[in-house]
Length: 528
Image 1 (cartoon, rainbow, N blue to C red):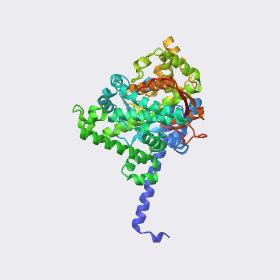
Image 2: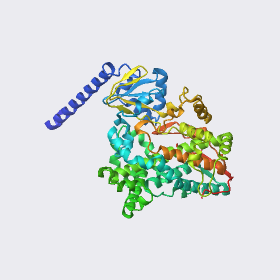
Image 3: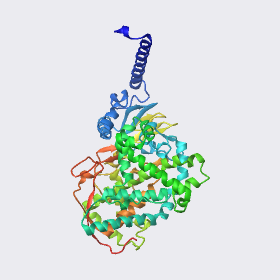
């Protein structure tokens, strides 16, 4: 048999075997180094993790987003600090016990903290966005260009636009009350938030609230990316390759990603159309204002970079805010006591026909504020661990010294369900925020939907404004009841960057289906 191989083939075979042998030796040596010599070898944790990312891959890819629950089990076994996997050049350390290490992980003040390369894999489709920017200094510069557009003052100026979209949703809900139709409230909220954030970033909304079943392209694209996010964390080069592939081919082999490409192309057309007419600047478009601002370096005003930024802001501003609204409304409608207490507070607040409420008035209401914060807490925001890397300093945590260059991460789920901070953490209890304020306890310090530090979500102020205005308007305008919806439609099971419920009866997809019946309209005045 050997006689049939040419000398060239034999040489190639020998090279392949030699390469395999060298690779195997390097791998074995690396594992031995990790176990016996690595600076973090004294950290408790499963020894299987030093063999590579296979442990995490199994639970997050093969088992579909289950690694977070495995971390919880490790916390019970090993304690709150553990080395989980090699992440070049050091271990990735994940804290499961929430709060003690929070100020160490997330940069504030003059600290220099980079984002771990391992954290940006799911965002490889938007490589020049803030979310995918790993370097601390570049991130800070890019964020400074955008900060003025998302300041509290800028968001207050956009309240009439937000109220107009809420009024549109109220029209749809009033029609549902007249016909007796059920409303998929989570999809309705995603259309609302998608309209608001596209209006802010592009200067005009896409009118998603007019879609009969509310199933808009932005949310479909988000769900598509979420389904593959755990896999692309391990193979980040896959997304850029797919972006260069014709949409018709992607639709055949990976339909979820095709939705993202379609939405991205639509946004590109919007940008180009606005740049030709200059209408975007007059309408307050963030992207057009940035394109025309000569104080921003040309490389940062490139359409592709701003398109990356727009995709992230639109997607994040749609899904996380709508999720918080959905979770909050579920708990409100599940217990009428919450609704009654909000209405009692709102009786002292001016509702102006044609304008609605003012967020500055609503933020002064203790119980409504508690509802908003509990809605955020139990929706969790981004649940996946987002590693940070302290480039030049050692971190201290639970008696351990974590050397510079170590990716350290934390999940909002473990923070928000820590019983030492939030007693009975899985219950919806707005009063906990009122009591904390009376006691002088900074409970907001441990609300991490938007993360903390210099990489805190840029859309925080807009999200809060949407939550206050939407919850107050809907609770004071309609009597609603849950329809064929239980806690199983709310509690998260799959971790795909954000958390999604497990698929259960009458649920079309594992996003959750929070369905309501609008019994009647109780306010005569209209927002419009």
